[in-house]
Image (spheres, rainbow over the protein chains, first blue to last red):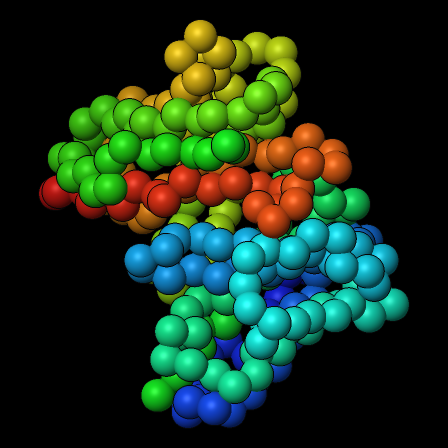
Length: 114
Length: 118
């Protein structure tokens, strides 16, 4: 079974631009979570989607948004990029979400904002 | 508040030596506990998990972890470290259904970076 895939793997953007990242979960998984990872803050939860609905949301500004499609694929968007948005963005999928399930992580998208 | 603490930011061990990475959690109920490993530039790979039952759990790559409720700990161990074990290790608590909120379903520690000396 194919794992979680994320595209693109690397991105370079400039301040003020916007960016869209994509995540394809493991087949059959309906929950997708997004995390931001930085050296200073570690892993921070962005949001979780289940059946096309946002179920949980982390403490990030409204510039960070996401959505999930009927095939469970998910995208996240960051508008008006800031230097501090440079990070590794990780996507994780699980069958139905919830802390009792194992989350499977993709390789991440490395975003550099100049 | 729910939290996970990994007291050691960086640990260096010699190849062949034993390893113990510490993890303490703060959670109001019996937790679901996970250890993940991350190689440079990669995503997180699950090493092992504890949900209930036997408090000593075995994982991949020869790792094991022991859940100690009285100490709120879930330390990761390996009897003999290999150079390929050099990576960053994350302990996480899975929150119970409905309890995700702004922290999500997995609460991570800050990680422990493991270096292995030849």
